[in-house]
Image (cartoon, rainbow, N blue to C red; front, top):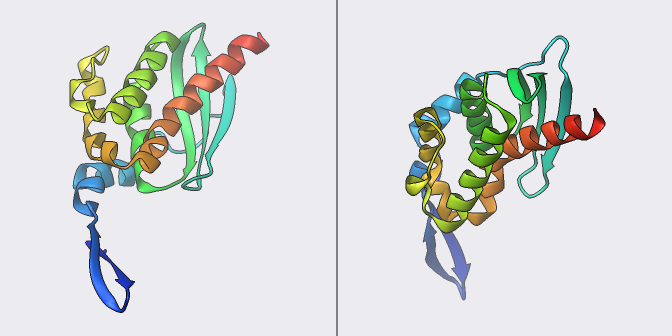
Length: 166
């Protein structure tokens, strides 16, 4: 993997920017993506919802089994970049038995703190959500924020859709 990008300007090679590949794709993120926790389908989901990120090409379908506002089981089918895969893996690892309100709070915290570059200061509802802090280096790459938040947005929208349809 290249660690530097070079651009040719007036026949002079210029170090344009050193890419933070080692930070952006750190081992913890790669490990979560490789684990693919929750990848697959549920036999009889209460709701399935697909969301796309046209900027990166990410596509995720979440399958939820719910008991009222509580998530019993989740699975996902993710064809996406490493950041989105890792985010989906973390989400499915910690989401079961959570209620819809908590997921919305986590989604909003994640989105806000990525934008404000303050992810380490996020007020997570429970300690288990602190695992999302591994995405702090993504804060410097605005075009990659959606990659991290897409799985959460898909769950929030799935729950909203299920609520409006019932």
